[in-house]
Image 1: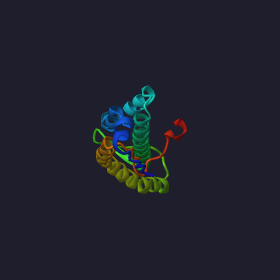
Image 2: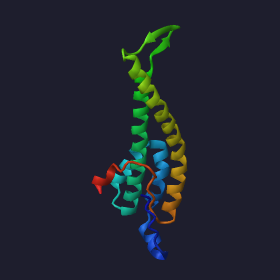
Image 3: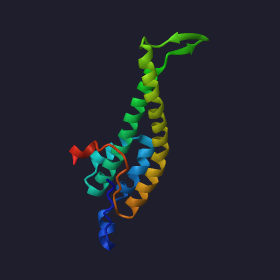
Length: 147
């Protein structure tokens, strides 16, 4: 659920931090690693909350990528190496079709998530600059236990 708790006046400038604002831009270049480091070294709650949101989104995208590529790989019948068709795996014919039908939508969802990452980073950075935190939509809440 998106959190849009906006602070007022002087509370807004006192409770926000530069790290909390820039963590979303950092995540564009480092995936979840940069926000995880910011989360670990920061003692500012605003920075930590924004870092948690960025970590959740980027791990969600990684999980989606792994699922898409594994099912796509399992669905592939054969590949061409040096002009020779080579069978990848001995997956029975009905299963490779199922993996293909699952893998293609997952791959499409992954591509959409990659493009959405840029838009989400802009929105999250703008929200952080205005003093509120923003949870990325449809992200898995992985960091809940680290609060």
